[in-house]
Length: 553
Image (cartoon, rainbow, N blue to C red):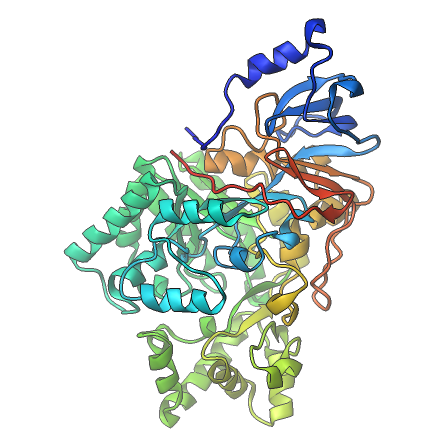
């Protein structure tokens, strides 16, 4: 069941009234005329006008233009439900970029945040003051504590897209005990389980883990099973950035499936991939595990993005013991000469498997002004310029930026990306952020997926590569993630649904963002509506902020 504040009632009856001659002079807020409807279910497209009232779809069929306060001519265009990005990391960035330009310009109307084990809420425990200070530096008064107050804060703040939140397992564990490599005590685990229960009751849609990161690396499977049981009782799902995406990807996928089986919880494998050329052959095996689990009754899906490169931070390459205790402790270990030599040997071995070569690790952002020339350079090239080994260059970069060095890793095969996207059990998720080509983001060279993932699926993989028909491509972005979330009135075009809509030209839609020039909006998208309000009109952002924090009841 899904509940929203201010939800309109009796929309079906309203639609029926508008369809009768008696009400021929009544007015819709907006009518989209002459378009071809892709309803989100995967069904064949069909022609119809759409009439909106109060933010919802009130009628579909032939609607006279004089019945509308405004008419959008969608002749020769397609209309789809707004795209639901099932995997994003806009929890904090949305406050810097509330108009979510990178998202709406590619048709995204709902983002799912709190992925990979990290969420903005709950904001509690020993780290709360530190995190609030960091937000304050960005001009944000992080006054929330739990999921409910975070959602309320978003609604007051004003955003252009809808937000649905997962609870980050890593966030809960750090709130409870910090970054320590040990099992939770019985009392500590009880406190974490209460936090999961409270977050789900306040509207979270599920639990996420980032088991390649800390403290996910420190977390035994049994703790995640216990948390997922609580999630299952609330009807939510478990989304896992699995423990390994390289040498041990099969074992990691199997662990996620086992958690779902033991907990009785739906599972989503986040950004499924096999990185490093030596591991590419394992991609089919990972999909086979998911397919086999579904046949055995485990409700498991996956999401993937349409690129052969991933993006994360350089500290993911360090051993777990180096990261224990947080940034200050890590930097102290890097300063130890004997330990540093051991770390360099570790990095050489690690990079050999993911992504395979130091030249494939490209720096995406540096904070300091004097280091901006390093952005867009590979670690191999930086090392050459510094006249050090590449492993030593990584450690110096980490020291320069106090541990926060995003990079792009060119580690996957084009064949595997197509294999994933084509599979009917795989949704589209960007793993990206809300941003715009201004301010702090403009100084970085992020992964182009934040601007182009959904347009790339429709343009390159659907129209050009012909991996699937257009209705199936749209289903992977709309009804499929809506069903995963339990959103009954989004993700489909039908009377009574919220009017999250995308009007686009299927012959022209294209991702324009590239790895060299990532801050470029997609082309071919004419209008985007969020809750019935035009956020993009004739390809331009209107500045409107009709987005809402969605809450699962």
